[in-house]
Length: 380
Image (cartoon, rainbow, N blue to C red; front, side, top):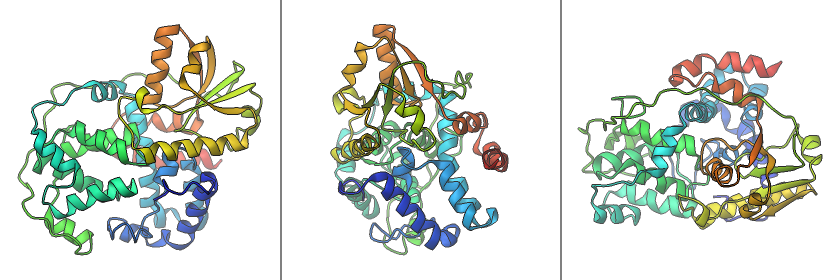
């Protein structure tokens, strides 16, 4: 997809793809978005998720582009899909122990041979084996396909959802701690208790335009059970863009700097940080790491005071400012530094995030009904 092209500035590439999609294909999105026509025909979806995940494109900016060209009713479904990521992120911010348990739990009681067949694409299920190859080669899967994939993984192959979620995180360019983890939990039936997702051959055949006709899928499976209850915690963050230190730290998952150029330029140093696999709990594919590094390289071109540095460099500081990285591996790394060095952080946050996350305390229906309120807030 984009992982193999290291020639274009990713900010410019994101802008170009967004402009093309809004101008030429957004009008047909609502009716065609659920179809997966294969990796060579993606114009029915935006393919912008890798850029949004790394904030090479800001959600609010993309929403504004859509509304500048169409009425809200025409692009409502597209706007909802953009905000699903915002919702998931806010939900996890309010329940960080869900991530902590996912990242630390060891999956047990599964067939290792079946797992190896699955990740090598040797299950004999035509669509699933194709998607394994596509995921590894393209570092992307259509959103509808991800649901089918997860359902087959959990209910037909009988594999732990945690292993599937980590497999996705390894290969997806848009792998995101919140969206990925919580989507797998939703398919399994533990995110919304008792509401799981079953992949059916007829549905797959229809929405892949007849490319696949899988047989042997388990359509009678019940939801997984989870004994632990995750209660909502307080959001211990507020909107903040006040500089308190001379060093700013930026990870690869929030790189949008429009509106902050003056602030970022005022720092003596901007440390651009990319955790390598020996510093992560989930190993990432080489293409995914290359995409992240390219994104950081493109930020460096915009700020003369920035440099890509080893994560170990942070242990040399007692305090620094940080563009808040949200719950996930980057925040975990900061917590490790804090525990070892008693380092203090000044988190720079985004007003849009803090405002939207307050609506993530319940299900998406509650968030969705507040989207007009969100749009009004940030159109003023």
